[in-house]
Picture 1 (cartoon, one colour):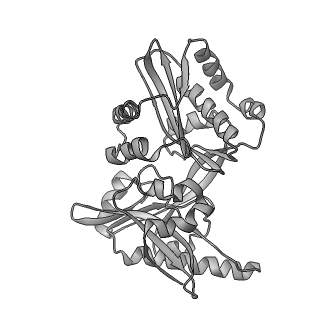
Picture 2 (cartoon, one colour):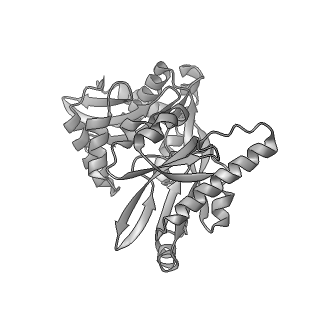
Picture 3 (spheres, rainbow, N blue to C red):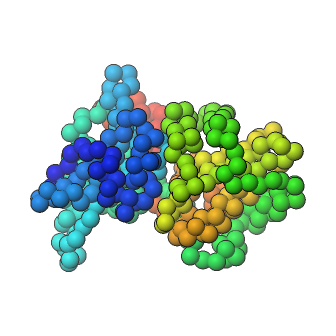
Length: 318
């Protein structure tokens, strides 16, 4: 088993069939410096891969998750037949992943893995901190009536109130520059890391009717809110949302999320993924839509002096 850097197109050629839109050339091309890694078996066949960003800060190399991507895109094909052989193959692959990351000799590494990746023991053995995180997902195989019946009553009330506000709800109607400015301004106001170039690439270069949609709400020609999702045949991901905090209209984002869930179901997606959040207020909002809590793992590792510093700021991670 070996792993090595490969082109975006080589990675995407098999990744799309396994992880969908998040493994597509179009998505990965929003990043200027993404590194794709191919995993090859002993017959030199490409059987998997993942991706990450390597950036330099304060003179140190950092390995991190690409902004707005929920995980590192790891997938692999395990064709072993019996359970023992399958476990052995998975362990070998994850050992190679761990060793590849370690060979990069980064001062800091923080990566999230898809929820399907459960065997993080090789990274744990290589002294990475393996930390549980959580996302929320809605099963879109249920009827829309059943999905809505699981909404929190306060959430339903906010949606009903917003429906009485004479809002104009539109799909893919915003000029892309206006859409970018609205998201950028809102994210900046919350203190979030915006990554302007990546955000602009998502809105102006990546998005089209085959991979994404944006619902917006206006009243008296004033933009009150917007929700942007990307999707493939399996999953719809809630990527961006913004609201006009000065509008005085409540429930706008709640209504736009409901519209997005309905749209994802219309597209035939099987899952609506809120893409996770460990922030209390955001988690509470996601939870109000009655989704299922799904764990996934991040792995974190830092050189000792940096780890000591991070223990004071990011104790939950280090």
